[in-house]
Image (tube, rainbow, N blue to C red; front, side, top):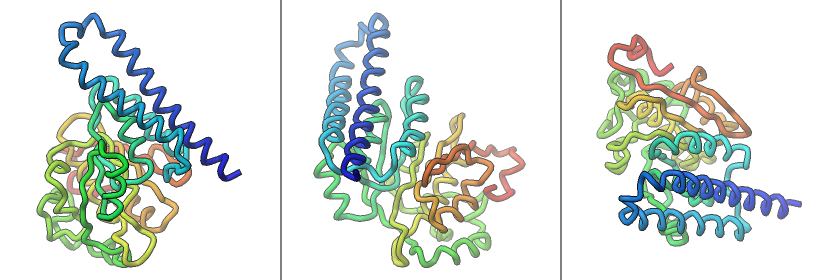
Length: 279
């Protein structure tokens, strides 16, 4: 029975990716008269995208290993990507590399998907099997055992709080991920998935910094429109507590299984909530 469920999940994911490929093909066919003059310039890109999608479909149709999230949880992010990507290229930041990484990249094949991974050995394994993924190894300054203290004391540091909260180079705030790759700070992220780092033993980094930093990025967004933040493993105490503190219950729009979906709007200079904390 367990094997049948894993097989069903893998085939279902392959079907989702195949659907994305089919929709993209229809869009391209419908726009053919408009883009005919630029066909030669786009042929290589389209071919590479299709090749990536097809290889991902083959991977999930034949692998016995399924993603960490359930099909219902995956559908939440997939639906947001599907509704967003036809109008513009989507920037998707994912904390963590895993068996689901090729899937997320394939779902967002018209946009940019960047993965951040704390385990250097696992980083090498995943990139060896999926060399087309865009990923960076990163280090986290926290430990899960510090979670309660971090939550109690962050308000005493002005650089942790709006309106001074920022990430790059902010070493005074222990929750701020201040040394991430430059691209993370330079690009505005439409979707942020937090499914890492590890958070199930005391010496693990925990997701405190990732949750806090996602909130800072979303609030500081310069472009119009919200940031969609997806947090996995909300059945765990730390994830739930930090989500309520920084991502905020008022921004929680959907939850299925162990996944919560937040929609966070940017906070402008004249907004009265700019200095009222995160929630």
